[in-house]
Length: 77
Image (spheres, rainbow, N blue to C red):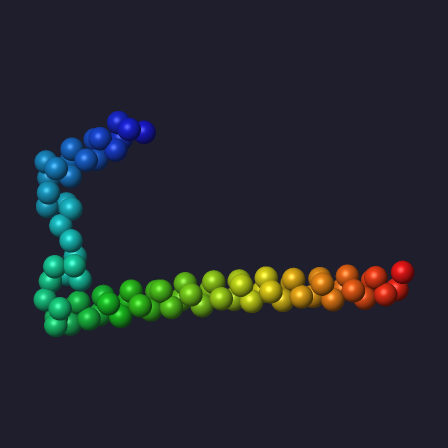
């Protein structure tokens, strides 16, 4: 594993043009491409946040439902 990391590091050091940053990192902050990339990043963060909130909500729902089922079963016995 260390050999692979070393090889990748040497390649990036020898060929620095493959490690050049995108327009968001070094470009004109007022350019339309930069604004579009920023909007895309925030959109994808929103999608990930939405999906994680759905998973969290489902977990809370299942927890509360199992807790209420356990209480109802305890009352029967």
